[in-house]
Image (cartoon, rainbow, N blue to C red; front, side, top):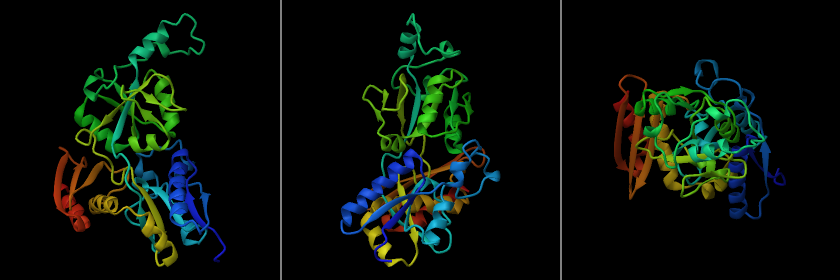
Length: 338
């Protein structure tokens, strides 16, 4: 069907759509003579917003990818755009990872309330939108670190990887789950006195046009007032496998789409995430496994760092090698940490 547009499948969340539109724009620039359309598909993960993602025994693999993959296999879509961190390392027969976008900032961001803002609110004699519990909210100064939080402070995250690394730095912290999209999580933090902080991906915040100012304030059209943000370096919080990269899944053997993917792919990012995904696959884990891996290209070599919290104490390691040996490097590191 040569007249049919090339269909780009995506989830319907704000972040997923931002990523899909980025790939759509890239396709249009590279192939101005072709027609592309975005097709929104609801996934199992979108339907389970009240479920706990940490309870992996009750939720299927490919939580945010399965329905998109079915659309590919049934030729109802030609490319599926994913946050690569959500894409399982074992893909269905007939599908493959066709391309990976240039990686954005892979780090995590610690978000918390601004003590100075809360103080100004308490001084307001006519708080029009006051609600019970607001006076009990706690805040910190700009550019705070995990060490600055009060003993027993509560951090909200549904990621087992983030929880394990938080407790490695601050065993006294109370870690609770949080659900919802980025804006929902920020609003929950802003409003609820029982929460002191949450952690989100820097890349997701940037793709939603949120900004961390040089003074440490979180800014954006939908960001609640009075929130601060501190970027966590990999030495403190190692990213999850594939974090900040967009993965493009396609049918194997589709030469027309393969040609498009060649123009979309970022070579160095692909080598990095290939090493990370090889590590995760060899560890036998999924996106909610308490492991983390992060690869960087340095010259012609690949530097891979990883941590596993599957046993006590946590096991950490790193390896360096030729850029062309990404799979071997990831598998080697997994063998050391098992």
